[in-house]
Image 1 (cartoon, rainbow, N blue to C red):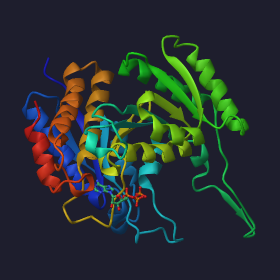
Image 2 (image 1 turned 120 degrees about the vertical axis):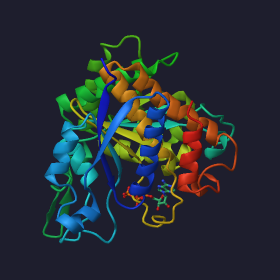
Image 3 (image 1 turned 180 degrees about the vertical axis):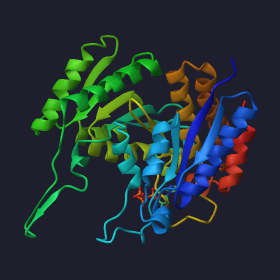
Length: 359
Ligand code: ATP
């Protein structure tokens, strides 16, 4: 039987989303040339530019293509001056998560080079954790549906469901198992001392955790966790939390390992998955050719790891590791990389260097 060709839907979006996705595609194509997994890419319109042309930032045909594809590679979407007629910002990437029910927001923070972190005394690899963010409910459940009364009162509700939490926590424990650290651990990050919704979240965490006796349990309040992550990030493996807490702490975690340009992410559901850098469209640097493509390239790596596990395809899984290894090698010397990580390379130079280091 011939090798499987993965069908990848590509949504480049706007701003630097387009620039960094081109580098992610470059590394995937190069990997295929060097014996890696085969991918066929099909591009679909999305984002603010698409809204200007078609009247919607996320056409139904694009969502359908994402559903049919084996995986989705996304750049970044939205431009500050392009808004809905009522003046609100468009967030097609968030709408896509909801439409495809991508409940698990996987946000790894891995330190690729000592000089990327503002913390003292950390070496490459010392920080290696994953923030697992609930993606479709929590405080974001009231997206587009919060209420404001008479200019007096405004309410957004925290929504925690049993099924939504159980599947997320199960994902967290499976992930800890897969990562295979010497002492795998899942930390429950909440505010169970104050909120009913958070005490419920913790109770469900405990129920699911009972099925994973080999993975250590731990609890932390979200405010304390902001402190612990800065003080001792090496103490963590997988951290699971509701949507808004994850939104905030994943940016903090990205700041510990080189900033937004370095951070990859995966939004995973039972039937579909989207891989994209954590950063947005960065209008301030778009078009200058110096955006950091590493977050996007590492997101492509996460995609291969996920495809590999899902399809029992060791070559695909190893492809993810090969991208990560190339990034580690290229960024080791101080002064390499794009300006955001203290280097002088432009986007394509950094992309080319990573491609050249693929084993
Ligand atoms: P969004 O609301 O869409 O998440 P944002 O305006 O909060 O976007 P980003 O677009 O993610 O923020 O970027 C914030 C700033 O970080 C940018 O303006 C840019 O200066 C910097 N930045 C983000 N991504 C990169 C990157 N890949 N390379 C270099 N700098 C980046």
